[in-house]
Amino acid sequence: MKATDGEVSGTSLPDAPAWMGPALQNFEELVTKKRLGHAYLVISEDPLQAALFTHLIACRRLCQHDDATPCGTCLGCKSFANKTHGDLLEVKAEPGKSAIGVEQIRAAARFLQQTALYGHIKILLIEGAEAMTPAAGNSLLKTLEEPSGNSLLMLSVGEAWRLPPTIRSRCQLINLLLPSHDEALSWLVNDQEWEQAHAEVALSLHNGRAITAGTEAATAVGETLPTLLDSFTSVTRGGGTETSVPAVWGDVDISVLVYQLMAWCERQASGTDLHTLRVQAQHWFLLHRCLIELWSRLRTGAAPAKEVMTAEIFRLCRSTSHPQFSSIAEQFLAGLGKYGVAG
Ligand SMILES: [Zn+2]
Image (tube, rainbow, N blue to C red; front, side, top):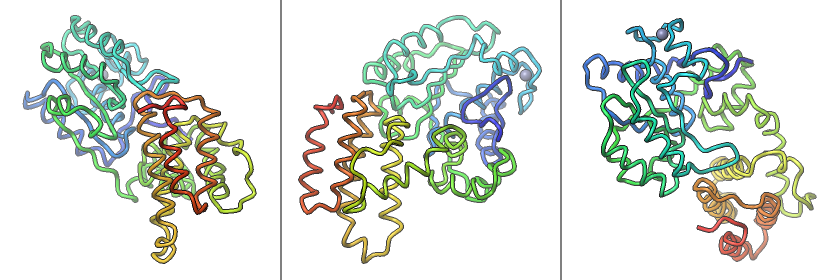
């Protein structure tokens, strides 16, 4: 399996999946017509696709040749591939954290104010920009209001609604559609050299988000995913044999656990016939409601003690068929503050 494009890896330039060609071409036309703006907000239901797009644009802008695709041999391309280009700064939540802090944004603002080393452009990429804390967002606002002459700022997000409107309104929007099933499958099989069956499963697990599927499934999460999904089924089954938190829950990050459980709930609701749905819908939606609340707090920087949090999620999942589930769910939501995930 090849290294995936979600993260620019090694010393190679990222490849552009075929379906992203038109969006890249539209952007290049802005450059050709000298209508390039200072700030762009790239939105995709697949956040890693949005991030990949900003990397592809950065790579093209930093290439010292004027072609539509980067040459791969100039100093600009080589430094980009080595991640040593002095005119490019990438900002995202630091490892182990789920928020982008104000100091990161202040440092980025200072970076943009410096003179470009290679003379023509300075590029700032903010990946998962919706994870900025309110203070970080305010700090970025100043940079957006007074852009320096030769800077290009690109924010990539999966959930644009979570950004303050003041930031959204100061950026030009680029909406990227997800690939069709065939395009995504062809990319995973032909470009990433995956087995067809493996690709089909990964795509369905990630609801067609091909770049995320390609990235996550290539990591350990991909290997633990089937076990994780099985555990959701056995834990939520009334009277199941699971009496303690499944070991696999300890192997993944809490954000992965919550995200996958949320997606699993959605599939339960969408994959069932109407009669069953009528009986069970309330439970799935209540569970989903609790997870969404937890998820949104994790995304804005909450860092609960993992063991305590997974034990609470486990208790919640086991209770879905309990007659008092609605009050158990209420208690879960009311108790979030206790576990370090205050709203
Ligand atoms: Zn080049």
